[in-house]
Length: 227
Ligand code: UTP
Image (cartoon, rainbow, N blue to C red):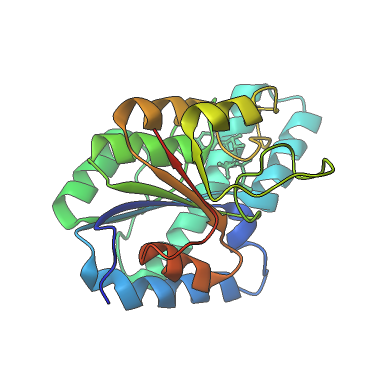
């Protein structure tokens, strides 16, 4: 069975990639991506920085660096993750450092792995930006939670939603922290952009690589968020 989505942007959380420090998640994703790669017209992967980014951000903060520079440390780490995954896939040999370069490579080769782009946002926003620039069908967010809950999952009675709208998602996430190393479930600016462009988003537990393959075949996993 072919994949449902053909023009895909995957926001692959650092928390997922670094869930195993021996590289098993990188290997698992590289294999899964190779197994479906031929079916896709466009495949862009944006890697997060996870715990390593947060460690460097906190060191930078302790060293007295401002938020912009803390973000720049975070971005550097997201790019290290991108380089490792890209080498494994034998895609781009360099990680682009601007949207312009990212779009140029993606248009030319239809395959790209990149990390962060500029201070003041998370890699989820990069994924949304590139999805809008490259006319993606879908953004997939591989993260460390099963999907979107109707309230903070630590609250009693929290229920996992299989479907939601962007306005519901915004209401649920409003008030959550958005600062270096601390973007809650999803970057709020990315929600606004995806909604305005009419691009759906699937949030799923990326710690199980098989979930990624299921999402690609439109099997019910996590939460689908629609405009
Ligand atoms: P992530 O996007 O990985 O942050 O980028 P996150 O959402 O906190 O973490 P995970 O990966 O989902 O666990 C790491 C940090 O790098 C900076 C931000 O400080 C972000 O928190 N960053 C990233 C930017 O400033 N700009 C970008 O375009 C991307």
